[in-house]
Image 1 (cartoon, protein in one colour):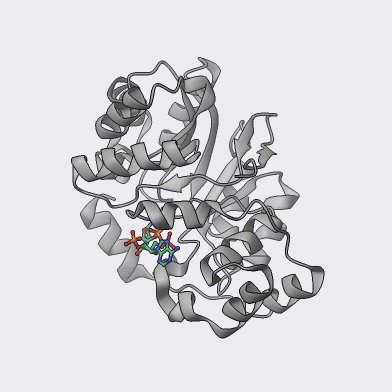
Image 2 (cartoon, rainbow, N blue to C red):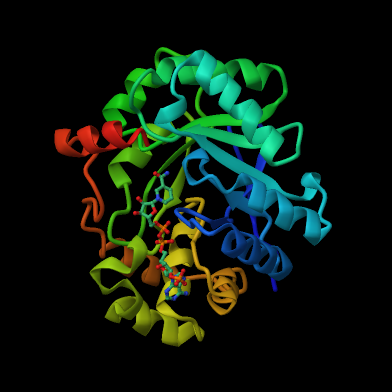
Length: 284
Ligand SMILES: NC(=O)c1ccc[n+]([C@@H]2O[C@H](COP(=O)([O-])OP(=O)(O)OC[C@H]3O[C@@H](n4cnc5c(N)ncnc54)[C@H](OP(=O)(O)O)[C@@H]3O)[C@@H](O)[C@H]2O)c1
């Protein structure tokens, strides 16, 4: 396997351009098995969320892998249930404890909801105390992001948003670049929506490189300098999703894929009051 490329964040910290996600995996045994398999295959960056309550299982898998934290990149996200300065601060200390480590590589605000300034002030304090190596946000739409970046002292290193070939975030990326925040994708396969895995253009391009539609879709994102964390519970697919570092899409193919962009969400609209209401009620 060719090595996963790193990207430098705005504070100089290096982060792998590809990691893997354990999003919404409820079963602790399954989480442990997936993490062990992924680390064995060569993944080093793990994307977690406090809401998913998997940090202890991830920690157990890391321990069994024998890999020291210095070789890994661990991300978690502070959920709405822990919003506000004191709850957020305490919640990160609990995450550190569950992960049996004295630092996290990256901590994000999961949603731009509730007292997210309070949450961020806690992350800034933890960053200055060297308990977190980089801090950032998730699901911040461009308008909210610009307002936010104008009113915080540590510019977010990352904004993790929905991004895949059908929603390429071209507009958002311009604003993130302006203020030096790196984009990271969640849902890099659109979770299979829009017939992602059988898309004719991705499949046809893949044939020329001996790659699958999944690999072409991921390769496109990393070639656009978008960090990806594909999620799979199957070791065979985890391996497939890692097979994107031994080929390069031509400029012509990149342009063909750029044209697949529909510039709209395939999940939920963060501007939709009903969705905000739902997230707030669920405290996610
Ligand atoms: N920051 C955030 O707010 C955030 C972050 C992450 C996720 N999410 C949420 O998580 C949900 C899904 O996102 P996701 O990141 O899990 O989606 P994703 O990575 O785009 O897609 C995962 C899906 O694709 C399948 N899959 C993976 N690799 C495959 C391959 N090579 N060939 C065929 N199928 C493959 C997986 O099935 P198997 O597991 O069965 O292989 C799984 O069903 C969304 O609803 C989103 O709201 C949110």
